[in-house]
Image (cartoon, rainbow, N blue to C red):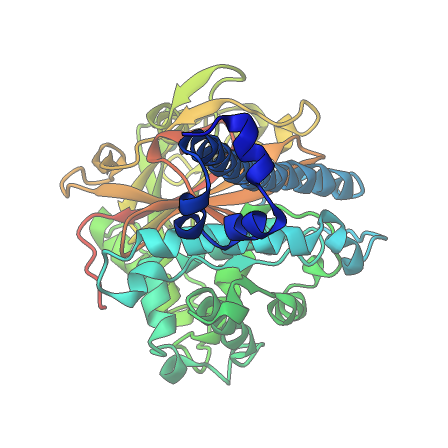
Length: 490
Ligand SMILES: [Zn+2]
């Protein structure tokens, strides 16, 4: 055995080459200690390589995390952006079912500014979320369970529109009517002003939202918006609008396009006979409505409200029945938290009409102090509840950000029924949320997938999973409930 010193001298150029070639050859030449040192060096190198790979992996992980954080901050920039745009708009007004006469407010900012929130970064983030979700739904056999998760492009302050479209896209009855082309045979080309153009354009968007093509992951609504503008000129321009008002216009437009009434009959101007029973009055009133307006959209969304006027002098009750597309509920307090039942109670609570408001009693034939109350005569399949956060009276006091605690399942409406007989329960499936103030805000939607029942947040082009626990918030603005026991056609 030679010393390490002498062995190092033996390390000639030839040997060094051997060292590079392989240990089998060099083992014959080197001493054991020399070999041991060489092995140690090799081990160190291997550890260095492992360490390097670990650092690289950590770096990649932090980059991914950074990407996520950036994606999140894009959200808030979208909110700030919409808020900025909204400053130039008129305040939101709560309207009746009639078309509003408010002139459309226009914004000097055009659609091209909508791309300021770096769309490429947002769409790649969107893609990542989409892919993640697609993978997590692999357990579902039906492809329809992985669809409906496409986003909508913000083409210039159109988050109010996007929010409503996503809520309707997750309305199972409506979705199936449109996706399966059942609407085609119902298109009204005679009495409808749009001759079917609005519903066709809407279906195009809905089909893209439910498409599996990668090119449809962020759907453009430009063509639908131009049809909506033709139907309701108040939506011309890029000003922020009220989601609930937009919903009413859109549903009305869709209804007209598939109205079964192809020839408008002469309106019946006579009052409904006072001597009829309440249920007879109710069906007469409903039939009169259907004479003019009868469509699948009416079948799904329209209910009937009963209003009772009671004379405090003679006790005579006068009832009237009116169709409703949604219930606009007052929020009975300005701060804290209320239950939805309290809002419903406040809506149906008896109010006194006195002074200038005194109606004429049909029995006394005189203006009398009366009480007025609402009950629901006919429940719609889809119950839309609008929380009056921007009511006219509140206009100058700002938006009501009270958290309304609403049930996700089993909303029992039988308490508000006119006859109190039929059990009537509803389950929540969509919410249009408004964050911010009256003059500055952003709309998003929370929707429950009609087939896999998972909840998602739709924030313009971004779609992400959300826990049902985070759904109730002070931002909920329009609630969409479906009656229990609805059957799917898919
Ligand atoms: Zn009276």
